[in-house]
Length: 125
Image (tube, rainbow, N blue to C red; front, side, top):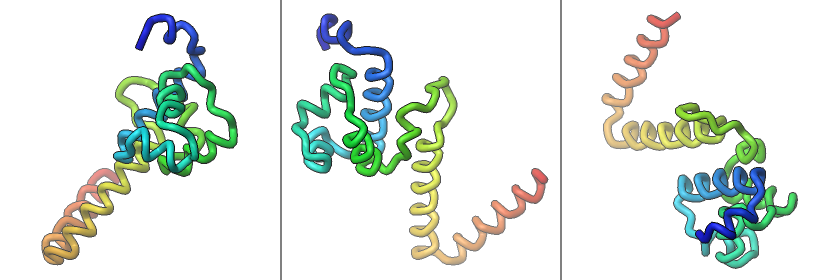
């Protein structure tokens, strides 16, 4: 991105843009597909992600739904190494899907995993 464009982006728009790009990529959405979902061009999504254009409140609601993150996700602190509530939610979703797959493929292994997790949790209490 050109340095002049970066200068035009204000810090809040940049933060929302970074979070949007991260969420879009976590969900495996392209610029084009996200644009279609919220009825804007892929170029507009690029501008949101770059922080050049501000996201209107009604578009933020649509974006939040499209990337399956709470609106607060776009405003959470970005502390290094810490998961935001939205990122934790995604990780838990992925874990659940993997466990469901294991349960379908190998019920006995699934049962062993559940017992192991239960034992770890009890040991930590």
